[in-house]
Length: 100
Image (cartoon, rainbow, N blue to C red; front, side):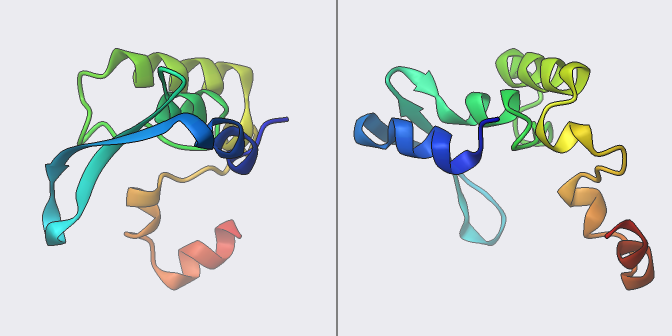
């Protein structure tokens, strides 16, 4: 099974970061390309990351990668209790403790 470190380490030598935008709190959103492929799409396809539609609502590559990972129950999708990070932050401590 793939993990983020394996995907990253296999791609690091040919990485290129392209800055896309500054967002809330001065953070920068960017894309990492490795060997001509988008690392983010690879992570989502492996079930190791989420497609955050707030910042990429029309990104069909990410949407398709997440749909396929969900259907195959890869990575985080293998846990029936998966919770998106933006939803996790809204939960109370008690609700979070129940999901751990």
